[in-house]
Amino acid sequence: MMNRVRLGVNIDHVATIRNARGGGHPDPVRAARQAAEAGADGITAHLREDRRHISDSDIDRLAAEIDLPLNLEMAATDEMLAIALRHKPHAACIVPEKREERTTEGGLDVAAKHRQLAPLVTRLSDAGIRVSLFIEPSAVQLHVAKALGAPVVELHVGAYCDSEGAEREMHLRRIQEAAVQGASMGLEVHAGHGLTFETVGAVAAIPEIVELNIGHFLIGEAIFSGLTSAITRMRGLIDTARAEALGRASA
Image (cartoon, rainbow, N blue to C red):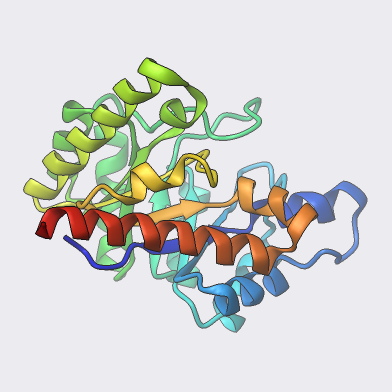
């Protein structure tokens, strides 16, 4: 069991607020620096085709000015491939993207898109970029991700976060089972989408999950408590959940 779960902080929605009015405030690069000081292990940014939040200049600055590993979320397009190859971020997480969606809706169907994804994964990997595929917690998706040669999968946990009671427990079991299966196949397992103070603990406690990526909730919570406070609290909840899981495992 990993002793510590890495926390990637997604700064997209700092840029969303900036873009609502234009200009340079609030600055997502400043947010990335603050996240680093508050205990983040990496910075995630999604450069969308329509540039609705993160911009090309944001990626330029993040790559040049931030010491933490940069995880570039990107659609499987030639344009985004060229940008990733130019900047060579630490990691590139390939996600589904539709123009009309407000946020990423579900995992990437790698089983249906494997022919499109195969050359993309190869070119990113050959450039030294760690490829992650954002998928549903499904055995089929895991097997195809492995066959594509991606070393990392990020499990979409939105259905778990959005449900309650018995349904939430069912989705949590799916995540747990997928994490075990992915790790047994040699994949590094991450998780993200929709995690909050309430929902993060059960996911952080899953032994096979080594990284969580959280953004929208932290930026929203920062309005009330400040970004440093929100990240520090999230970091503490993650660490506590993993420590308790370690304690149960060794008992």
